[in-house]
Structure formats: C-alpha cells, structure tokens
Length: 226
Ligand SMILES: [Zn+2]
Image (cartoon, rainbow, N blue to C red; front, top):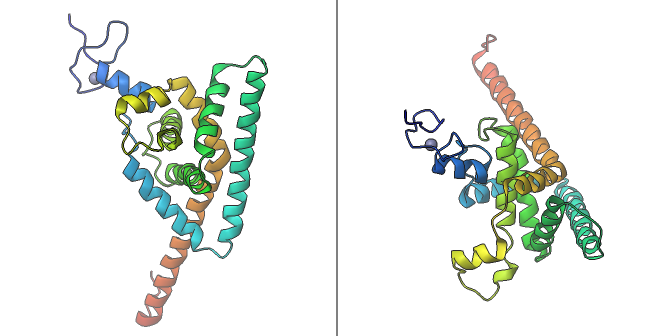
C-alpha cells in the first residue's frame, strides 16, 4: 500500500519518517503549520502602514510611539546583556542566545529601521486580533512574527545592492522552528498587546460610526425600527 501525505487532497508521497510530503513538511517547519499561508513582505508592509495611520490619527500618537520605543529599547538592552553574559561564559540555552542575536541585529539598525521592525510586531498583534482565521494556530503566528522580523535585518548587506539568496542565507542562516517560536513569543509578549488594543479601538470607532449613521437615517426617515 502506498501512503499519501496526511493533508487532505494532497496525493504526494510522505517522507520516510513522517506523514507529510516534503512540500507540506517544509511549510510546517517554516511557517508553523502545514497549511499556513506565508506572510508576504507586501502584506506585512500594508499592515504596518495601516497601523501607523491608526496611531497617527490619535491625539496621543506621540505618547504611544514613545512608550512603544521604551519597550523596544528595553528589549535591545536585555538582548545585549544576554549576549555579553554568554561571552562571559554564563551557560545559556540556544533559543535565548539566537533570539538575542537577532534582536541586536534588527534593533541595532537606524532608529527608523528599528521602529519599522517594532511596528511590524504591533501590526501582527493587530492582524491576529482582527482576523482570527489568518493564522492556523499560535505557532503559525509566532513563526510569521519571527521570520518577518528577522528579515528586517539589513545592516550586514550595506554596500550590496542586491544580495544573492546564497549571501543572505549565509548571513542569516535558516532559523529552526523552536527558535522562531521562542523569538516570536517574546516579540508578541512585548508588542502584541498594543496591536490588539489598536484593533479593539478601531472596532469601537467603526461601531460608533455605524450608530451615528443609523441615527442620521432615523432622523431623516423617522424610522424607529433600525
Ligand atoms: Zn502534502
């Protein structure tokens, strides 16, 4: 009997020691779930823009950016201390060390680039609150956060107009799933709540607009059934 991949509708042959075919196995190890739709650079960019607009529209926008930046600086400081502790010989598991290196790489860039990386995580907090079906599971969310965040480290390519995928791979290595999960969880714990709050307030605003629209409609038509 020939076995097939455990994903419904996929008739490819699974790998020797597993239930998934190579394609779905790779998707699972990269994006946290065999059927997870990857988060593209374009989708991330649109989300960041949307969340920036939501913040900019508020009266306390500067205060919000200020407290987000304070979290970003604290994260970076912790990451630097983690790496220094490691060099000093403190025994440390791989996950925190890799996360710390990536945090320093990404947040150690220009303020503008670091802000953009921070807004990426805020906007993924927004997205996961706004569209529950976008991520198949929590792991898929953490993987998307970690992979997109890491892709924002560009300093090692300064001078290269367009690094080849080989160069990029050499500089950034491929992150193991458990490391993605560790970093993704850490980032979401730091910036995710701000994104969820933005989404909540946006929903309230939209509901408010709906109520105002209905009130206007009632005033015009005298209809009281709406
Ligand atoms: Zn398959």
